[in-house]
Image (tube, rainbow, N blue to C red):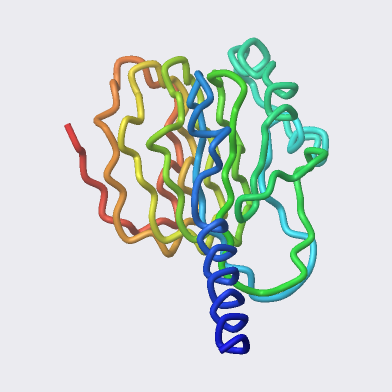
Length: 214
């Protein structure tokens, strides 16, 4: 009987640990800003993997230059990206880092909690190539102007949930889905084309069916 009870406790504990990995942490759900993104990663081998990116980080690494004065004006959110709280299977990663070392292959739930609405998501997930799905339902996009290269080269990405995604203030959407070859469908709110200044290569190398949800 005791052996049976111990086995049952062990099974329940394992079940609880598995559920913890998939649930959204209480501190994320109860935060007054409620500004977060949920993603699923498929890790096939151990090693350091990129979790998040930013225009400034990409610029520093590649000495990349743009001619748009709006970029210089709007992309002052590096410190906001650096304050992102990242949870991996329910456990907060501390201190913040753009990459994380995964010791075991498998599926991981990654949650990005932002301290305030971003004006730019340029290069936010550039080359984050272990991401297979992402849910933007609770991502605060009220002031979002730029989504350039937001998902560029996310070549494992299969689905994006754009529910509640506000596109009214978007100005630059160039290369947003460039290289997202596994995306099958993109249900994106209708863009206000009178405001868009550059959408060059927005869907280059991406063969998904694009539909408007309004």
